[in-house]
Length: 344
Image (tube, rainbow, N blue to C red; front, side, top):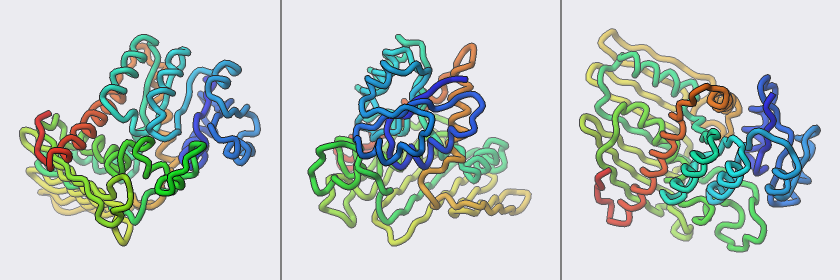
């Protein structure tokens, strides 16, 4: 039985990760830490058999653990990953893995030196409707993918608890997702990371160029964008991604067009149109419903534990996470250059 610790006691941790670890036959959470003493006091009841701390270093020194599950804002990921790897611990980290290519190089070097597993939470890959769409594409039901569109519409960022002490800026005090230092950007870094690992799965080949535009459609007062448009082009296909926090309603839509058919996702409904005819599936939970998804996290958890136990870990998750970090950096650079398509 592996022993783990959760770092960061915000909504994702207590509503997504902690329920996802409950009942696991291969690992259990024995400790947790959060920088805010008020969060530790508020959430103590969720950890009846674990020790809680306000200092991560103190927790790592006091408890014998095998891995950490990092659920803090992205701006803290690089330093926490390096700390955990330097202590010889495996690391499971919320998305995005880190914010910059420089941070990526540092943590990849630390991972190589430690010999431990570094795994990112790509939980949307395990949404039942996404798994079904991916299976249909890989079975060749629509032939070779030629065009992908991915749209995420939200009315506002996901609610976040106060996560750091002494944050006094009124624009970012109530939600770290609006703090550039903590989030790395707006909706591009938040929903864009999910979009990229799914779209890359479906494209089946490396994109050659990326172009992006970041906008403040509804909230010019925010220090981050509320809308992002990204375009990827490979040798034989293209993908268009639209993400917004400026919508009047919540929804998720995707269309994957191939040489022999189309897969369409409309929130909780999937439709396959192919040479054999038309089929549809309805899923209990629409993609736009909820933000924490413990049922998706359990499959991420199992992948992480499997990689720890593997004789020769594959490293596919870290490879994908690294690609997403690089692409997000290139998307921001494209926007800085007026939305110019940049070679990858």
